Picture (cartoon, protein in one colour):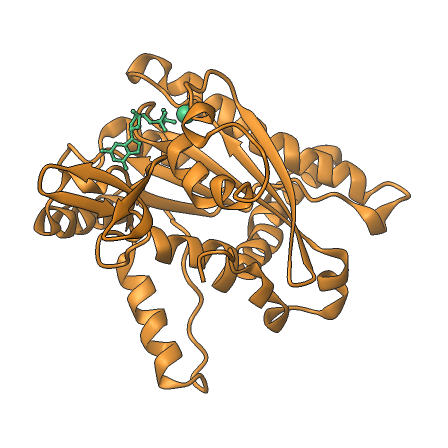
Length: 297
Ligand code: GDP
Ligand code: MG
């Protein structure tokens, strides 16, 4: 159902306590500028959230990002509260300020860990606001033949700190065959460079066949080929978010056109809790261990 984002299905995955308190979830987007990062997060969350409220037009809100911007939304769906934070970054223009960009992104991630660490050692440990980055989408340009040196360099700085989810930007500019080829190439480039992207957990063997099939399809999508758009078009009487071409409309939310819908379901519904768990158990633990070893020096 388009009116719902889908996180209300989360209670099945977690304790009732956290359902009552609500969820904190932070998504960061990084990559070269102009690849559609701001457009995508708007399409993923903001426009849907603002559907019934009076806010500026979506197109108006997508403007050039010039600094790290944090947007926080408190949303509630069927009694489940979610505090969603989107960290939009300016990205980089060329190899020169690529370093500047990953330095800023890493500093942001570390700062949230540090804050959490401080809060955790404080007196009010029960009500910590969790602003840690739970997932980071890395935007890969569609026009190359795989990952560039600077993409690898960027991801190398981040992969031990956050759950890195690579996406192929502007997939509407590629044919289906080109998307397939680029996906394969990206995966092999990542493997060769030993970059650890977010791994979906193994599917429980007692899940039903339909669930297992969905899980297989989701895993086969990586890196997600996405299309973003800020306009809603009329397609045969249906209002769809999409991009218009002389030969037709590429529908953002149509799973046969791109992986946008699967990515959103993964983020806010099926894998939100796992992304949070891995952040806590792996990335934050690494950070904590480093802090503790530095303190004991
Ligand atoms: P950012 O710098 O990565 O945040 O990129 P923006 O979201 O500002 O988008 C840059 C330009 O690309 C804008 O003109 C968008 O309309 C366009 N754009 C965004 N997403 C897509 C997409 O999926 N496909 C195509 N073809 N263009 C896109
Ligand atoms: Mg932007």
